[in-house]
Image (cartoon, rainbow, N blue to C red; front, side):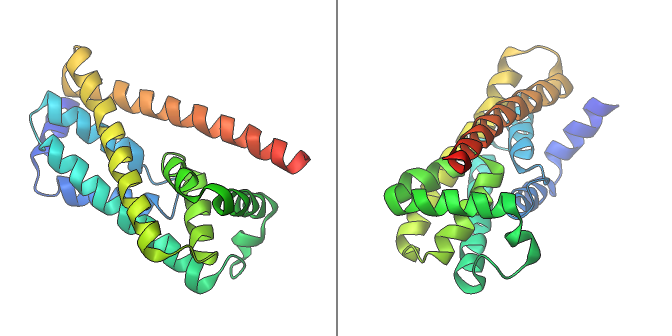
Length: 199
C-alpha cells in the first residue's frame, strides 16, 4: 500500500511542484521538511525511475535560491529587529554570530549555512541587513544551493541503490540518514554558539 502510494507520488505531475514548495517553505520555517523532501525524491528517482534525478536537483536548487534570496530581501528591507521573534535571546545570538563571521568570511559562511537549517535563516537575514552586495550574495547562494541539492539527492540515490527493499525502505532509510546528519550538525553548531556567548 505504502509502496504504491510512493510510486504514485513519484510519477505524479504534482511531484516536482510539491518538492519546490517544500524547499521554498524550508527557507522561512525550519520545521518544513525541505531537506527530507529532496532526499526522499532522490531515493524515489532511483527506486522507481521517477522523477528524473537531474530535474530533482534543478528544482531543489531553484527553490532553495529563491527562498534564500527572499530571506536576504527581508533582512535588507525590514532589518533584524522588526518582529518579536527576532528579539529573543537565541535569535539575537544567532544574528550576532552571523554578523561577526560575515564580516570576515562571507562566502564561507553563506556556503556553510546552506547546510544548517536555523543558521541558514539567520545568515541570510543578516546578509541582507548588513547589505552584502546582491550580485555577490546571489552567486554564492546559487552555488551553495546547487551543492546542497546535489548532496541531499545523492544521499537518497545512494541509499536506494545500495539498500534492498524497494521505495519504502529507500525513502525511510535515506531520510533517517539525512536527519541524523542534520541533527549532528545542529548539535555542533549549538555548542559553538554557546561557546561564543561564553567568551
